[in-house]
Length: 179
Ligand SMILES: [Zn+2]
Image 1 (cartoon, protein in one colour):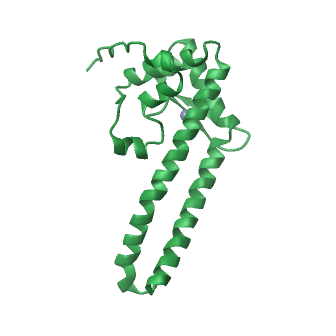
Image 2: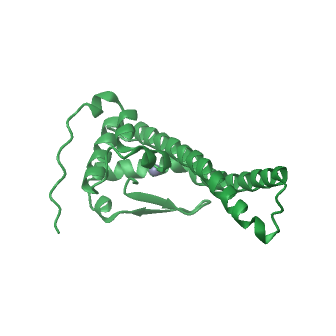
Image 3: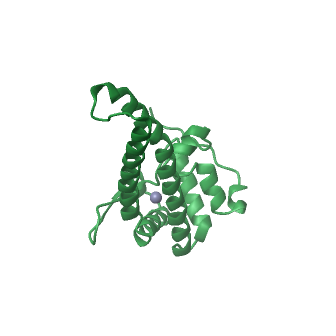
């Protein structure tokens, strides 16, 4: 679950794509969204994510080749396909978990950057996040697996990271949605 915006592109020219609700929403929320995306830009998260992905694929291939060689499996032989698929599947799980953990770390960094930029600080960021998450029907406390593979921190831990005083405030009920 994102923040209602996405920065796309690499290099000097980027585009900020906003959810319609965010674009038409409160200026204070728009400030948080833009500040959060600027945090991603400032810390070069797009490039870092790309490099991590490439490194992860290379690492998996090298590790798989080494393990197959150690087991005496010929990767070119058709009979080795089941072993190859099993190896890829086994390597994909920890790789995905590590990549997701790094992405969540970056999201918290972008939140901290946004809090340092907007006039209301972490309270303004948390208020925006809470409103956005409730309006989109996000699961505030997802299950363990969803938390482990999510590219964004669980909403509850994300709000926790912004300050305990804010999290302690009661959460307003989600507005009725038109069907
Ligand atoms: Zn983000």
